[in-house]
Length: 191
Image (cartoon, rainbow, N blue to C red):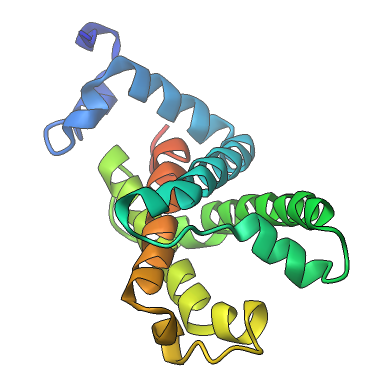
């Protein structure tokens, strides 16, 4: 793929030296759209990041990690007496709603308060930090207090094994990478 550098405004070239990803014409166009349509970009980022991470969670078993089925886990939590199919469907709806809501929270609150530049790489790093915070909340509180309160999962879910804790973090990092890649806005002072 060849980027057409002549088509980029000169104002974009001032940050390209430090971030080679931004030299790709499609990335620059996407960033323009995402910056202009922040709410839509946040919602889209939430849908895509949640979906990719969810599929990844089902496939983690292929690399020796436990399968993370947040759809069924949420369904059992919200509808404990429903059939497995209804639990999976309802859990999926709640799971995707959570992923979109967290993407909107990230876009409205978290991403703007981080002071490093909103380059493509900077945006992914910001979202990775956000994913790490979500993983810490998940492993440190939700797993033992919300999803499995009747099990002795231990502090930071360590009784489930290091693979489970790592899988939770890896899942949220996949979410964060895709969140930052799609919600790839420019600094608010830039147009």
